[in-house]
Length: 155
Image: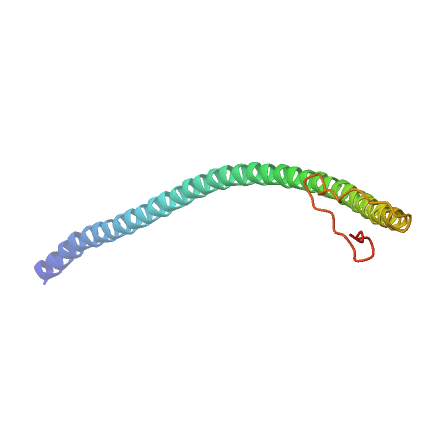
């Protein structure tokens, strides 16, 4: 049996390096997989970092554009408010002028009515004195004068 035990010992000696070689191969492939996974994770992190840099730059550009637009809009609002204030001031001045002109027109119309009454009274006096008054003339100017029934001459 010595031959059989020698073969078994030789076989055991041959199997141990094969087992060690298999374990080394297995460890190397596991290490290689882990290295690839780590490299892949690092590449993903790097890509995410690059995306976040691009996003940050885009955000910064968008923020700059937004702030510039906001500043421009604020300036436009200030101009519109200034114009509105000026229009309001102009409107008040126009309303004041229109009111003053309306008052003046009413005073002039009252004066015209008083003068028409005076003319009518003078015509009546002329007729009462036996004189013939001159015929009533057409009103001059761009606007006809309204005559009241009391101011008409008795012709």
